[in-house]
Image (cartoon, rainbow, N blue to C red; front, side, top):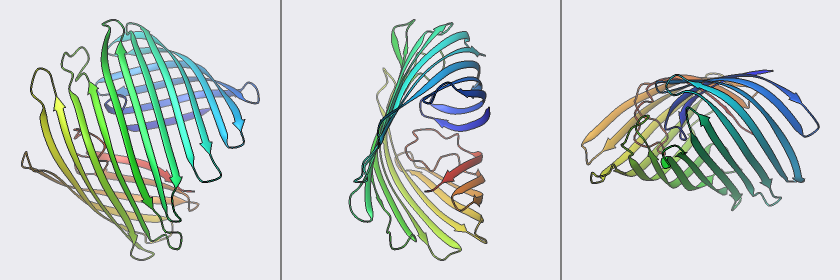
Length: 324
């Protein structure tokens, strides 16, 4: 049996989502597991309750490659759109070569019937490879599409593609640099049954560095630039250029406790818009590998430049991170 709570920005839904899950899982065979689950999800002003039954099957394709197949059916009740059923099928795969190349991919298909008649396709792929002793490259691609079967029209589409470089010296872990460049496109209705479908395209570049000043102090610097074009037919496209600058300092009074403070500045020169903000976070590290963080974001925007034109990130947050 298990319980879980997940909250955060959902790229597929285009809004914040909070999901609580409770379920029971049972091993059917050496490679197959069945489960029954209850979900409660809140997205914007909509609340969805789901009863789910499903099965997962793992396939050991080789020593360095695994494939998983999944199928599930759920009964959903929405506070906005009533009762409907969802059938979902998925496949995921992981490959890791002896040369240090890691590849992960997943594909999901969902079809909703009842008060809602929708069809969704989700694809994701991640790639990572070591180039030199201290340098590695990575790439990511995401594709989400939702089609209204009743209207025969495309309701939402989200794509993200990015490439990056990470420099992590083996001789010392005091310095880490990560650079990313990518393109994000989001097309979705502003609300349920809304005729306006903004098409937003953004080109993003970011560079982030971490430097351990001492065993107790860590400095974080991040700079990101984003060019956005949004079109709502039949209006002409609107453009915005945003730069994000973050200065952060982390103090570790003990091996398990830390306190982080950030100053953030978001600037849109064409709109003459300057937003200043801050964030505070308390952290606790368990067994030198898992960190729990609790904090508050006093600014309205995220430190992730690949989020588009959303300013709903003000408030408390909780995060879990780990390292290997």
